Image (cartoon, rainbow, N blue to C red):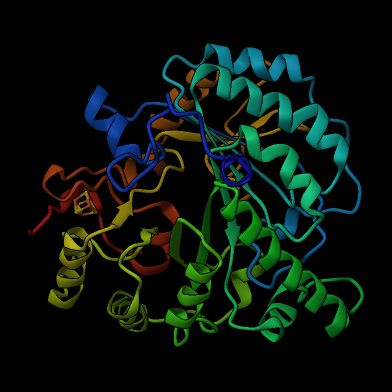
Length: 384
Ligand code: SF4
């Protein structure tokens, strides 16, 4: 009896059995699915910025410039739920920050109502968190959540100390950082062991590219179900950091593929490698990624099947990176209508290509700006 109780307890965060398990074959965040289903990009995903507060200030933070020490009241939750009701083909929501769990009030008044709403409609949910705060916060959210998405770019506490507090107003001591690092790892292990799908994201940048396999090993050890890997792009705090060449990026990914644990799902995103690429080595890597077991390359959701809503101003963005101005407001417009405006925008037109043979629907704008300034993707085609 004791064993049975322990087993039921240990999986208390597993999703309800009537929901299709997330897997390399089923990733509802990938915009290629709705593109295939509807024949055009369609809004299926809404991301909410639920806070601009955070206990960390990472050197690469893509929203670092919007972080603050205080914040205004949220929009009424009823308005937000009404706006979600109106989205005809909604499949996923994501909650992001800052650190979304920074204030208990945000958990109670915004996050739990949103997650319970999503569960009741069978909509899948993701929370982007640094999981460095008390376990009790994550424990309250986990029963209603599909994916806990964390950042993990470290091989030891020293890395975490250097990277995680690079932009704090006052220096953070080594011992304090180490305590947070240990808590982050403990929280991840506990959430995983209790059945929650934890997806750890690493970025490939000048600090991580030569130790990405070691980072992967720690992520597997913590019990994460997925390792998500993206190159770092020069947005916000990251804009002053050194940039890797495409060769360095390719070699880091090859090394990771050679040394990964093949039982763990690896999800790559925002890669600068395409089936239409001129470099045969890059096309070879693209093919390898397509053919490896438990490896997927997700097309970027931003502006393809997703918008970001700021829960303070109501502004709607194509991404939570602030570099592109808002193109609508949820207080006055339907999200489907705002999304339609973006689809007609010349910036979206620049990268709006689709090659069914490669299951690819083009680069996102950061990738195109960083590596392909002079390339017109609408004139290219997959070569494989
Ligand atoms: S969809 Fe665009 S980026 Fe992808 S292979 Fe085709 S032309 Fe290249």
